[in-house]
Image 1: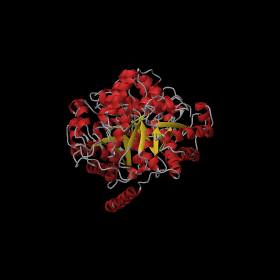
Image 2: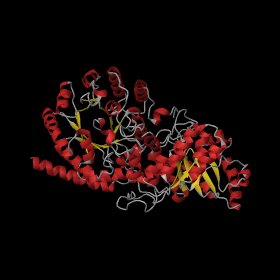
Image 3: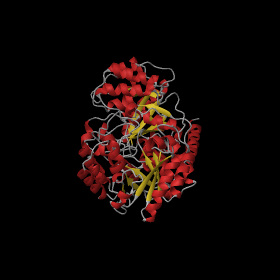
Image 4: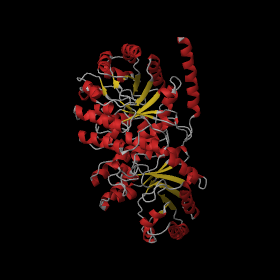
Length: 327
Length: 308
């Protein structure tokens, strides 16, 4: 049975790669795109000012009201490492769980996973990196060792029927190694997918990527993982995020991570900007006629961004939010 | 991305990253180690001409009084970057003769794809403006002075809303027909997205060769680079931009304006396209003008580099 499933998956992967080669037309886009809102986690964890728990909860509730289908709520990481996420239990327990909306949480290890499930998590995320040096500097082990550590999480999650999303960092460049080979990204993605992650989010962690590099990386990954299981997570450090995301859409990717107000700086470039702004992404998708579920560039979405920026005492990084022109 | 503790101190410094990594390297053929050179994304033009509009479009829309010596120094610095076209001309009306007498080597005429915009901006209909431009362009050509045509509101109008590709084509064709060597299609209020860019260009390219077209994208809604990428994919190889992304939007208070030249070059370099422009020098010019007019840069590349 396992062999049959494996060969079926291989056939699907083969089909996916053929589609990748022929989907190079300017005008071919997925009909629907799922937006994964990472502001409350990736966004906030890279913001210097600590946000009080009730503010985080309100932010997430406002994002739910704005219709975002997936909102990454928090990270079950030790407060020693990420003080911003110290209130993870209170946040997950305190937010309103809207029907039809998923609230995954990051779990850096098995202990975090257990705590997350105890606090009511129905979906978790784990992370790897396409760079050995980045992994070594970050969590003091090799890529393979880091994935082995997650094996326990994946087995437990599978037994409990909890979906696991995998993140791969540094897919378009690394602050330590510089250039990253697409083959390495494909290798790590394949491993995480075969370990049981239902979706692999490919992260341009330091925002150095440009559309050609995005295309090369995705071409390699799509030989190993079906495009329907891929997401892109672009940082806007060099202003390339939306163009890179556009390229990914042209390649058939239909899941995009973003953060309301483009929150999150870059720990590797003081003063640089962070995540792709959800408002700007939705603006583009709406303009392309791509279905995004209930999300629109709506008053509610803009209010959620304004709310958290006020709480953080910072200006929004979303251009759409900055423009007051009513068109 | 995962949790990042204090290891950041040991990473490559940003200056090092800028110098050593191919996606930010100078766009000079042969300057890079061939093994590292990015192979151009297939289907894109090999060379892209950047038309720098900072000294004109940028500074005018910043509504700051720039002392002449600062402006001259800014333009001088830009002249050292490899940029082949730096727009310093201001709006040309029928009183273009003084500009020519002052040594202008090229003139620009500004049409619009929207009647309302044309009336509000230059107080005449599109047809009337075309008649005026016809005279100007004819006389300029007589003196061997090339004329560039601009079409505003190519992807949307602050008064009329959406603009049909057919109207843009009609106006562009008129300007091209009267002798403009290049037509710059402007998303004046930055409302365009890759879909509307594609539809507009598909229509215009039926009448005008892509080699005679340029795109002039405003970044009001953060769509500029995505729109430019679409234009490149359709064979356009002339792009207008402004150093530091200067120039707000007169129709959207607080909004951003032109796409930043630095961010554009970053993308073109990464795509392996040749521009002959030195990104570092452009960044220096951007830093200079921002300090001089006391403005924060709108370039993400500059923000990431100068604060490191």
